[in-house]
Length: 375
Image (cartoon, rainbow, N blue to C red):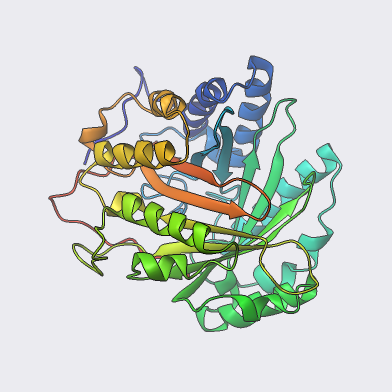
């Protein structure tokens, strides 16, 4: 087990992850003043955990990343445009159990809503479903910030369908969709092994989305493309090609080969409430479970970007902004590759980068742990 490269001394969790964020802002074309604002927001989200030295254990067993860093970065790519930088946070990391973590997350979200003048009424309407007095599951609340010029991010909140028990996840998702006016949406979802996340866009979005994330174990490429309820044959062919590149499977679609792996995830986004049809679909491949090391993962990411007409230069710069280690020395820096289709818009490729503040997962070839999905 190796540790992420660090400067002399022992940095804190906040200093380490805020430094990564500032460097990534530069890659995404955000100015120094925006980077400073967003770094402060990250520190606020982490709360007391931000001051925790990295030679101590993580503040909590965060499900957000393999090494329990409560921060993950991602860059969304489209042709002829700078990447869009996002940061996913667990604001309640280190606050205590799931109930305390959820309350800390709500306080952070409501403070942001007050600062940037957006409503939380849709979240408030679901609080009893996802944040009960004695929640269950691997997490309570995550918050994602899409970082824009001007220092005011777009905000997303992620909630746990298993908060009242894994056996009630489907019921919880169905009721949440009903309360938000999407009465027909649940019936349009594909079958899945587990409900992973329920997400809401909060604040300044052109079309705020409600999103349902599902886990699918041992898929083939054809099955993966069949999960989408958006687009037609061209999109399905694109999804199959992406799946094969990201997983490394050949046209034979090996199923379940190799070590135990996380499930592929699908996300179904809903905007209009009239017909229950999804307006967006994203497929997420946990590429770190399908490669020997991050060198392979980056090759696949570059290939996917090339297939969609995107220059891979900013990805290389983003990797250098996050770590100085060689990609061949670990696996998990590139956590997920994702392909998104939104009705009426070009496809989008997203690469998820782990902070690795506490630990670098060794390359494949030694014993591999299976990391469970959220519950």
